Length: 173
Image (tube, rainbow, N blue to C red; front, side, top):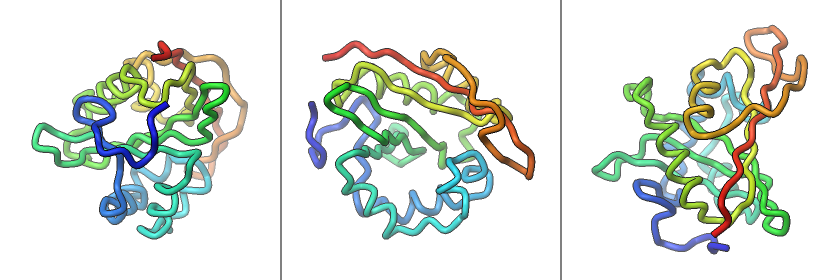
């Protein structure tokens, strides 16, 4: 299993988020268009750089940035609830550079990251609020398969929606 804090790229065009990235990441996660589809603990719009830096130190999480060809960050890929023994983690992500939306950059980055499998995982899970059609398409393009739904388990714009559950099996390295 790769160690947290190592300097090597996690996959082509993807690097580990560092404390100096915390302001940028917090800005992304506070944007209304991004936070509306995040987990409820992140939807409040009160993400700070200090909280991001704390998350970067957690052994059960890995935050990475996918970048353009000039190494400018475009978005975030995060794994949480990492269980190294069972080889499973939950994935979430955000495209921070909204001007690049609709180009398939996030699904491509997810596919590269999971193909490299830097934590030697067996399976990665993810969930999406049903109204987030862009994210549903993104996960499908990145090789995830829908495995079920949790009814009425996501609230956006004052309405209840399903959480759509996904998994992607990985080739352990």
